[in-house]
Structure formats: C-alpha cells, structure tokens
Image (cartoon, rainbow, N blue to C red; front, side, top):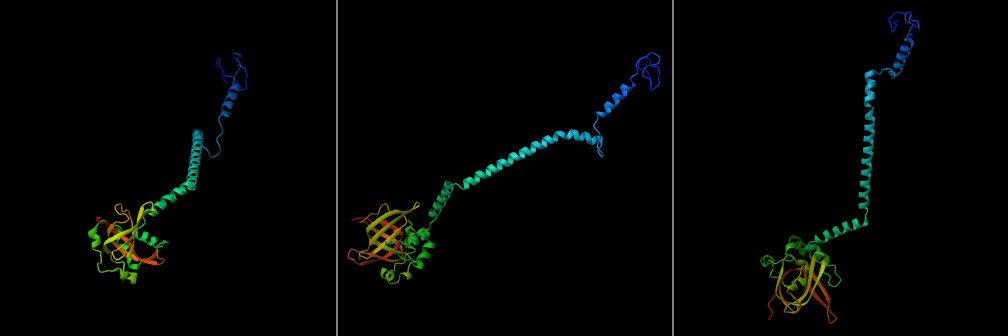
Length: 265
C-alpha cells in the first residue's frame, strides 16, 4: 500500500506509513467502495442492467395508465347517464301522449273518401248499405268526391238511370254518376268529421217530391235552405227516416260530386 502523502510503499497490513508516520486510509477506502457498491440495487436473475433501467424509465407510464383508466371510467358514467335520460323520456306519459296525438292526426288526415263514406253508413239516424259497385267506383275515383271539374263528371254520368231502378235493386247501381238538373234544398247541415274533413249534409227533393239525401265532403258556402241546385252524385244505397205523418220516407243516399246553386227567380 502506498502512502498518499510521501508515496512510500508500505505493507498492506500497516496502519501508518513507515517513513512519514501518516495514517494509511486503506480501511476507509475499502469501506467507501463497499458502501458505494451496496447503494446499487441488485440485478434480479435474468434481468440485464439495460432492462432494469428501462423499468425505471417506464415507471411514469404507470401513472399515465392510471389516468387512462380514470378517463374510461368517466366516459362510461356519462354513457350510463345518457341511457337513463333516454329511457326516462321514452317512459314519459306526456311524450307518449304527444306521439299518440301525432299518430291520431296522421290517421285522420289520411282518411280517403271511401273510408269516410264507409264510416257514415253506420250512423243511427240514416243508416245505409253501400253497394259493391259504389265502393269500387269511389276507391278508383277518389278525386271525384268532390270535384269542381264539370267536364270530368259529365263523362261519368249515366243519363238513363232512374230513381225507381235504384229503389228496386240498389246493388245493381253505383258504378256511374247521376245528374239532377234541379233539386230543392229542404235541409242543409255542416259539421266536422275530424280536424281535416268537413261534411255538408243535404236533404233535397225533386219536382216530383221524391227525396234524396246527399253527403258532400266539403263546404258549400253559397248553398242554403230553400235554394235550388244542380247536382252530380253517386248512388250509394237506400235508407229511410220517420216522416211527420207517422210513416217512413224512402230516400236514396248519394255521395256528392258536384253541386252548384241555380239562379233564384
């Protein structure tokens, strides 16, 4: 062992320099070296120093992973809340009522003339039974009920039909329109079938006092009780009502196609 002061070589077991008497530091050096070596964490079996350093370097990633898991948890909670809100809305009675209301409006507005005339035949005051021919005609020509095109209706009129033929066998008629050049309005009523359909009912009579009942799908702003009209319509069937004499008055029920008021004298 060499002396750190004078450089004299001494025995390895010597505690002081044989020349200058300075205490040799061999024990402290050894102790320092051992202490330094002990400060280094031992390398586990099968793990290189590079791998160990990589492990130390990757430790912050564990914190990032924890943040990611927390973020996923927050998103999951938000999704659950959204699902609960949607489920609550679907179970809300007011929402259901609104949906039913919209459905009802759609159903009513989509009613065809055939739907309406089929429904009207079940009324209590003047029930009638539509002939199969009239059902087919209305189904194939819904735009005739009503129409303002007189040329259109004229092309579908059978001028040979007489009311006595219909009274005898209404099932044989309904595939052609009838024309009445002059009818007297005895009664007229307006009402709403539903929010989208207006109905005008007319009890009319001809010059022979034969009576007819007309269902017209719409308003007749220029026609009133006591007026005379010209009329194009489709015979639906027959019905009857109680008259003032205590008997029954037989009437032919018509689907109104075109009604025009005549000039009054």
